[in-house]
Amino acid sequence: MVSISKTVPSYSFGLGALSGLGNFLSTRRVGNQKTLFLVDDYFAKSPILSKLPLQPQDLLELVSTKKEPTTDGIDALIQKLQAHHKDISTVVGMGGGAVLDTAKAVSNLLTNGGKAEDYQGWDLLKVPGVFKIGIPTLSGTGAEASRTCVMLNEKKNLKLGMNSEFTLFNHLILDPELTMSVSREQYFYTGMDTYIHCIESLAGSFRNAIGDAFSHQALELCKQVFLSDDMQSAENRQKLMVASYFGGCAIANSYVGVVHPFSAALSVVLGLPHCLANCIVINVLSEFYPKETDLFHTLLHKQNISLPKNITANLTETDFERLYLSTIIHEKPLKNALGEKFKEVLTREKCEEIFKRM
Ligand code: ZN
Image 1 (tube, rainbow, N blue to C red):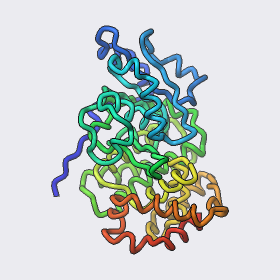
Image 2: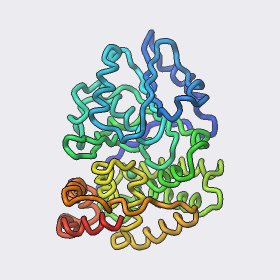
Image 3: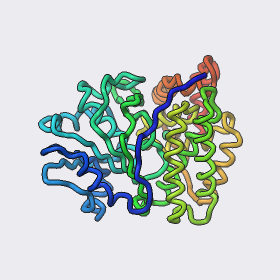
Image 4: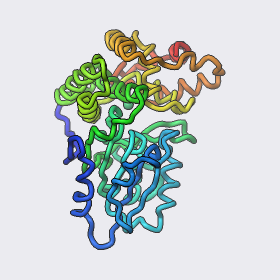
């Protein structure tokens, strides 16, 4: 099978790479055009914020990451920026996966118009978005490399992105200095997102040799980082940043599997953040990923990280029904993992039994 794949065309990589942003932006400014900076509100009081090369005409929006990006939240942001739409020539997203995804969605809507939910699906965008630059400050989601931007559509109980080549960033700044202050738990959960992307891609049926090579290399880097005594050393932060990028490239060439649909349901119904939800799911999925779950447990113990327990203990039948529906809606990854007849494997009862183990 011949597959066509597109990746991010350029990136700056290395400790201190952020300091080159000002020069890069100056090559892109024409007249009084504005750069829109969308920055994780985690940095609201950080000195990093003052290092950003904002010009007087530029716009800065702090993005809250308490919740995953929602279609309503993206629409509200677009509405707020309405007076500036035509003057924004570059969007810079700096933060974790949620902020990067927000930046991608905003960039796309600025040129495509309409509402965020109009583009939830595959190849629905008509034109490229505004030039977008991604600056990850967490490593693992692969959002910097992927061709999607995941959003929760709360009305439709749907977690789905704008899957399109137009969603890819035009440029990345990969600076491992930016992941220095991440908490141990967050660092682990987010790093495991890469691990899970790769094991799901490699276990699936929609694969190609390039995606596999990205997955193998990212997995190798994840093992080196999370089996070491100091997972957050400068060297390991650099390795995890590369692993995250490769993991994102891996899923751009294939699909995820069983973990992400269950994880998405936990985000939709219980509001759990993506990377934590993934860890809670893979922790109990040894029937689908035996060796991979074993290694996950090894890494969890090595890093002395504990996961929340009994998170579904107080749920009602209605909640389990919503969890089931929000899981099986993800047909592409589930077909990738379990084949066309995935609903015969993941019955309503089976899903409830799996959720009850979490
Ligand atoms: Zn993920």
